[in-house]
Image (cartoon, rainbow, N blue to C red; front, top):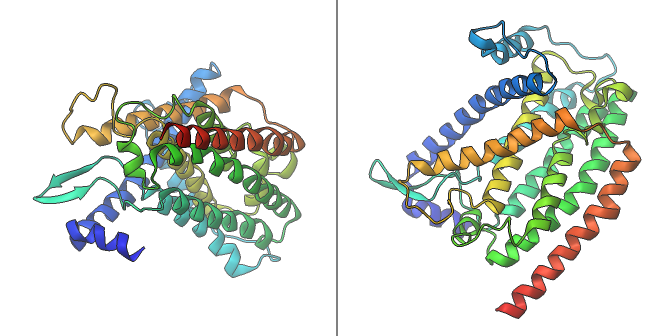
Length: 342
């Protein structure tokens, strides 16, 4: 790890790293409200009804109104709650989401203000492992939130979230092995550069589908939103949360959608690369990545408007009996192909 940081510091001064950290934080804060308004508008279209159209021009200020409403509400907690853990749990979810987003590359190394700068927070030699590490920590945000609330409905939602994350995290990890074997690197930047001739969504179509399905489960989105099933658990692990703390969980969920979209873009859709490598200027790299991420964000919204929620036994059976064997088989076949062809 120290060698990696030394390599980064070699061509990026400390002030550039601080500037990139600020930019990442600002992007996160501004991207989530945009995703919220996009989701409401698209859901309105999908369901043949009006979306937000009252607050601001064309309803564009609706996310801001929601945030102000939540942040200005009075904080409260159940008398049975464990105070410190109850307050810390939402913060864990936000911090892990932002930390995971920090290594999503938005471009290669370019000259900015006379300094060679990578358009990413950090290019780690253990990129996917870093993501899974913070994904494992994010589990505690959900588990502690449900347990510390002192409510049986919250605790049941937390237990569901724990079982679901463990089940689909395994398939999610195995789905990426094919990409890692093919690229021969764990660096996300190296994986993008390895897709110069062909995006990995083609040779790794099976791994891509497994990753996408597991990504829906990881973000607790429809049809895998059982930890938040309002008809059964009255909103699950966040039942007892309100005001700013509920907003933190809400923010983290949509942040994780952006993380999954960014990782899918990086590992399977060539990141900032385009077919034929037209040689666009460096400032176009982030725009290309954002456009590809937008495709996945719209897909998340589309699936929410289309598919019904699974039963919990169906969700668990699908993860262990279908996704896990398919992901394992894909990794084995890819390993054999890589060994034979090299």
